[in-house]
Image 1 (cartoon, rainbow, N blue to C red):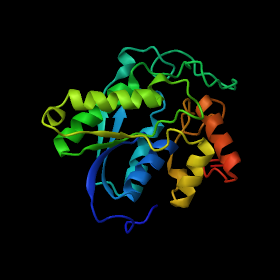
Image 2 (image 1 turned 45 degrees about the vertical axis):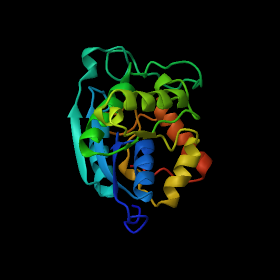
Image 3 (image 1 turned 180 degrees about the vertical axis):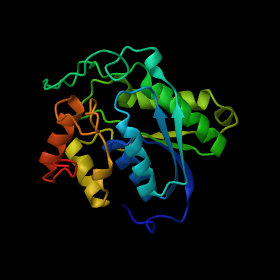
Image 4 (image 1 turned 120 degrees about the vertical axis):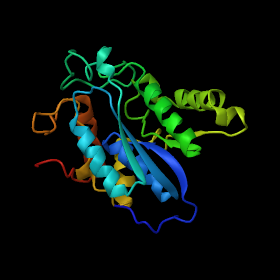
Length: 234
């Protein structure tokens, strides 16, 4: 857990999207280290890997967030993804940096950011943090830098705050970091990655499958960083 004494003087509110995964934990921890007061938003969107909701609660507790909202927006009603429908989760495949994978959930980050934007406007918060990454695996169109920039522009056009001269900043501090670099940054902040969950298709008891894209990326990141994954062997 990062220290409460780091850059606490300003305590500016920020909404952080918290999935329970390694990346969102690190992004939220960076926000806290930068002096923001955290308001965490976790979306139950009908995903098959609901173990991540429990992980998000654990991460929120470790970060000492001001408030943690779990919101139900069931995207499984639409389907169209291996995470929300009957499409199989790919296993043991060569991970491409260009192909859009079956685990892409249509418009998910747009939905999530829109919800975060609504809460941010109510809070009077001009900052939103999201743990997207486009370097390790850029097959997701809603993880690209140009998407984040476009949503930031939308936020100013679509809100009373923006019309009245205010602004919003969408922070994506991990966007151009490798998974190993993200893990190294988390290690420097003394984050407990044993609290997180990354697997797209966990066993009924929550254990990661070790074979989906997310498990492979996580394993490769820890290996490259020269750090043991605290979830391995549990």
